[in-house]
Length: 361
Image (cartoon, rainbow, N blue to C red; front, side, top):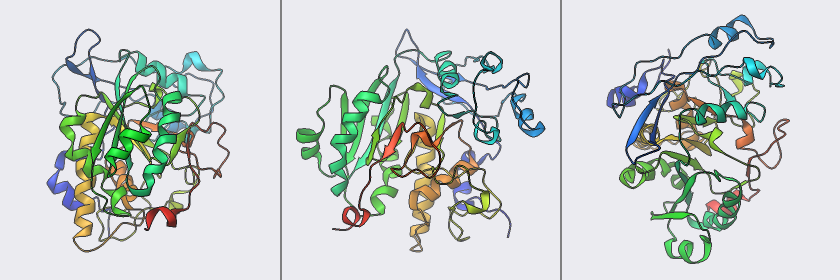
């Protein structure tokens, strides 16, 4: 049957489907001006460490990730590689959960500082970050708690704007958004569940012009709370988060879309990780590219009345197989109330809820 990678989307957006892409391009503002530039980044890991890695894992440390890519801006700056040698004292997670097969660091508490140093080396303070949530219908009741915890723990050193897609604009403005941070409230239509969740990629793409002033977009579900500090270690060109219930599972157990007719289809034996649909992000050009492809794919499925098994999460996983994230967050950044594994730090946590009461009037 072969490996299908969303043929329709590939024809429509051929530049999105370079399967070898492990690019690293970040859009940001120069420290001394409002001109937006592009930083071209590479990530190189040294094998001269005291860790016990297999030969295949060590090989990815020594590869300088240099990929063909058409930038959105003409200016480039080479970034220094990440060198693990000064950090021999770290107690690391098992190697498969420390670095991806395509050579990208996975951000755990013990590797968090490495990620911060890499970002600090090439991006100025403060960055303009849009924290994007969809609060439609009864889900808007979670917004006040979400904002309260984000004020305390989310990107406290950056210029954060809350971007809220909602059908209850007046209520959100008057009762919920009691924060000193900037707010951008955008009215959308309540289409019911699961379309409200699936359409957030469409919302992002539709309002591209209003979101283009940010350096990064960080997208989460609204029924979450920030429990520990989430800083610039969570920023990257294209960011995905390991699903807490599958991060240590075998590939055969991943909950991919298995209907071969779907644009989200992933054949058995494919995929390295299963990503959570509730936390993702990246620089604005990359998020817009992803939003365009994901929206195209689920609209193609809707043409024959099909919804992927896990809705937008299924399409997100298909996209990340075709275009692997340049930054991978551990399940510390998407932890359920009852942990699916021994996750010590719960930086972003899901709020317990009764789905049936929220999704159906």
